[in-house]
Length: 412
Image 1: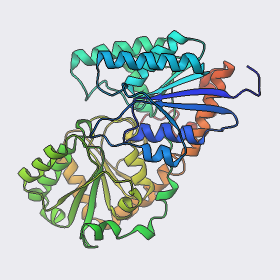
Image 2 (image 1 turned 135 degrees about the vertical axis):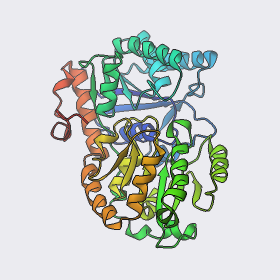
Image 3 (image 1 turned 180 degrees about the horizontal axis):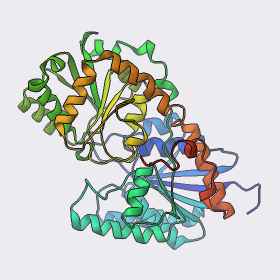
Image 4 (image 1 turned 45 degrees about the vertical axis):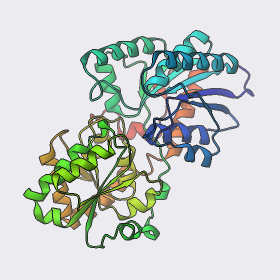
């Protein structure tokens, strides 16, 4: 390939719903060196309750090619149509690198790229579906499918070391084919939030002395809001002083909203929990939150935790995915066992009742995540990887700004 020819990237994602993978793909498409890389972003369509990140792609000037048939749910004829469309696009575009994100795009996009041939194939695991999603048979089927696709991929990327280790342990791939490239986000907007303080409280008529304990996540089963609601309900009887001192906004929307609203009523805590719906004004949210909670059953590297810590909001999170690559338990936040509402309630209560502890964790949280998880580090790492793949060099010798100093040789 001549040195003056741009490297063509076909980036394929199942859908641009609200969440970390959409941020990831849009920011890479927007900020990679346009003098060196020519990127096309191919996306499927979101479900009716998922929300869309189209506003961000438009804001960043990232044009997308939409394949409506590519959706999260399995549907043989719809998936076949999506595959044919992907194949046709790749055959015409002839990208040097096909880079897929999320499971459906990872299957259809890589399969099409294998048949078209001629380019490098990369897939990013933003998490995995090895537990928390399906039953035993379905999980086994998709694990074997991932093994086949991994053999035909040039490189696999995990967004956390924990995800990388899980995939190796499950036999999806071996350690020589997969590397960790952590997420990178636009974090500067969360560094100084002074001008936004009080806006969320005034919107919902919450006084300044009330401790705000929020959860920012799509209302879908994997985020396990039921655990958060159960923890709040336990606080009502076990830690009444903490319960009385706080309110608990649930920020986000999704398919489970009605079910969760009914659960809150059944638990008798409707006066304490506020459902805000989807919000794009996250500066306003983080400016007033005192504590952030993640109750998920499974994660890759949770965006809400990174953003919360950047904003100086201490986090209480279940021990899932790459959370321990962000939170040092008892130092800048708390990590609790998954599905344990009692421990979650205790840790939230401890932070509610100890303002000096919250303030200490706030400073240490910021220090841990910023600027390492800024999008510029992500873009730099990805450009280095792409250059390495095109030149035929081993990607295990990448410089990986900041990664080796922070994570290599450290089990988290």
